Image (cartoon, rainbow, N blue to C red; front, side, top):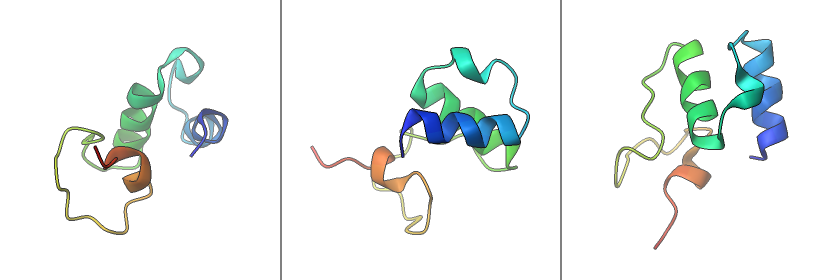
Length: 61
């Protein structure tokens, strides 16, 4: 997902200072605002297949 799309989502969720955040921090702020764990890029081999952020989070090395 592109940063502009994530910012739109953050704005809709009323995340503070969303326009100043880096992508990783922005995604974590959205996760928290949605009531989820802010786990983006913090868990290797995550089992959540239906996660919106999976493609960016679980990048193959």
